Length: 231
Image (spheres, rainbow, N blue to C red):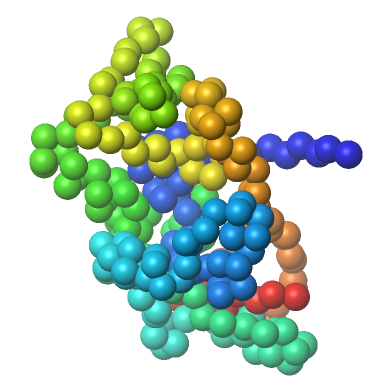
């Protein structure tokens, strides 16, 4: 049996980090064992990745908001989950100088105040200041592979021109959980590594409607998505 689903991707400089929820969740201990079991890749451990997590969290201003900054919906969500016996934990946020306006509704739209620490706000400006060149409105066709080493990228500009960019040191492919394996498959990397395009762990979401007393829910200020739960 097979199934298909529509996957929306952000077509903007900064990619998904520009519109994502702003929540930061590390893999659980059981996840690390699952990585090795599913992929047969050895050496991926929490201890090995810990310094890289810490470095990324520092760049992205990852932190937990004070409970006084939670909005009413988050408070009620936590109370309801606990009353039902559902385990909850607080998620971290990668926002900075957030005024809790509620404009983004937390996901699916960029922050008009640039409080969401996306790569468009953090890493891309650093790269440009160091002499990098930004090409937008382009489609990556494949990564050039020579002797099992990535040596460049072939992409198509919006005018149809196909360009090959040659790498001086390395190629970094960061096209998300969907786009990255698709590009690797088009580049022939799946022939070199059987894990490419497999082991996707999706992030399902289920809409929920509720009737809540009060009239100010549409303008409620404060930080949301503080509590995540596993059923």
